[in-house]
Length: 186
Image (cartoon, rainbow, N blue to C red; front, side, top):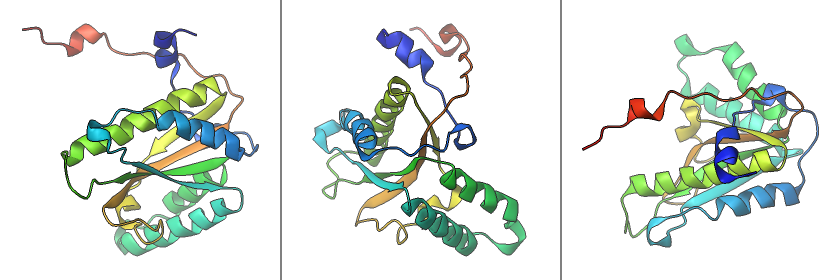
């Protein structure tokens, strides 16, 4: 498949579309190796990944429950929303916590390290399509309050979860507004 076709075929595949098959460590490592080839200014390589698969998915579900319960005011608490969050985890073959390690010397602006981490995720996401896997990036509101649960290092922050799994459903073709609507020529 040509690069442009690969780019156009990238889709969000959601956990409710995943089959019950597990992912192997080798499959996950292949995805993360693709992520590792993202560009980063001054080669800070800020992306960090925390992997939950197999039995540790239940551990992540417990961590999410604790974080959501701790950070959500009673008037906003939704048992339904919490249930859906746990179901997403438990329906996945693996969940990758997408983290960014800030360059402690701050040699580059923080936004560049966030962007580099997002490019690493894009590489990983494109690779899922080539491997017949589905993926979906979600950043729940409580994610910034999970430092302890995710054992984040100094200067590290979590940007969301990438849910992974094999799927069987047909994926709809994507569509976009014309690029001409998004360009200003000078």
